[in-house]
Image (cartoon, rainbow, N blue to C red):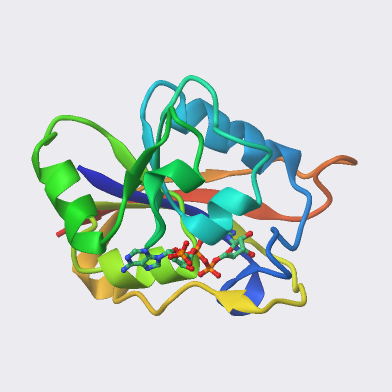
Length: 163
Ligand SMILES: NC(=O)c1ccc[n+]([C@@H]2O[C@H](COP(=O)([O-])OP(=O)(O)OC[C@H]3O[C@@H](n4cnc5c(N)ncnc54)[C@H](OP(=O)(O)O)[C@@H]3O)[C@@H](O)[C@H]2O)c1
């Protein structure tokens, strides 16, 4: 199953200058907990924002470039159709599509679940979550995050399932 996992701030901002616009350790912890042991699918630009492969997860990178441009342990897929085929061959696996915007936009009609962190603050951005028709999904879980010194925003974790 394909699951989108992302965080967005006001105005659907998800990125700025190749990075996340915010520092929110509670969301990073959530990301790690949810994806651990599963597969993550990342666009090449988002992958470039990481220090390297994410440990204890199968790392799939979407790029037009050859696999030899990436770490040997990564699975490199050269098209979104290849991602669809990869997921179709593994129907019981949780496959987390973790962005960025190009990858989300291309797979929006294929996704089964949406895991969205809403950050209720405004940030400068240059990358936005593509429009999603939420009438095609139902909210199945909603948990408020804990605002504190290290996580100085209101934020909420939501999960939606395709109807
Ligand atoms: N807030 C969040 O939850 C979140 C999540 C993820 C990312 N982000 C942010 O989003 C920004 C990056 O997003 P982005 O949209 O610019 O880039 P992206 O989606 O991460 O990566 C784009 C790259 O993916 C490859 N690609 C895209 N479509 C493809 C296709 N159909 N076939 C083969 N390869 C394809 C291409 O790589 P090649 O050029 O190598 O061919 C393309 O340059 C960063 O700021 C990042 O921090 C935020």
